[in-house]
Image (cartoon, rainbow, N blue to C red; front, side, top):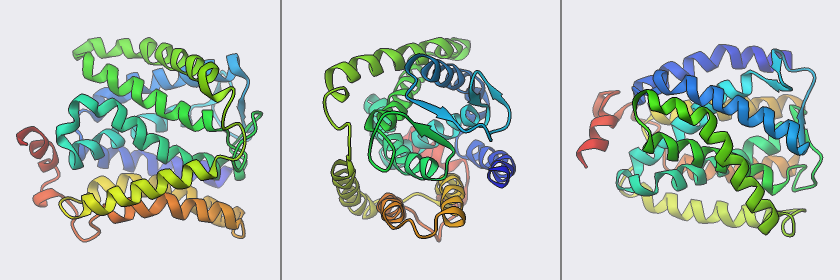
Length: 276
């Protein structure tokens, strides 16, 4: 845990600098998303009691390590940047699309984090992770992206309360309509189907567009940290490694590992988005 947190503290600023070159709004949007994420995490831990963080985390406030909400803006903004880069005409459906990407990201992170003891769930699930936990990531990303689209300027600070409120509303409704009754055990079949569908989608996207390394690199840094943690602590966890492999294939297919930036210009992604 000590080494993991040191690595996060070293690489997180680097990831934000890279992300700011991809999306100039990064520095302006990170503070409200950070506060909203802390409120959402703290209230979820306190109200539902479904999960708790390891005592080994540093800088815990309200039971939530501050590193967790510090990572949330990167998760959401990089997901939004992927949608803008690969599907620029999906602006009207961007909140749903970002939620879908974050769902897939969360499926990998949750399984690795739980196996490595970063946090633990009281609700049963696949490899120690309940489906509602992964869906919760997607719901929060959806809520933040939706509010970012609808709010402007200083009004975006309204997402500090709006995103957690929408998170809890949708969690409560989805729990009683679905997750209270279904998929409370092993949901590997569902995840494998999603992974297969995204792999096919990635193959189709690959023919016309791929992410440059300045955008993909942000996500590779985050994924690499968790994979390194798993390798250091559970190198023989075969099922978890299979899970990580299924998560990695779609991203590998849509990444151009030879091209650093779009048209050789870090700002070109933004102009490409606005001119299509």
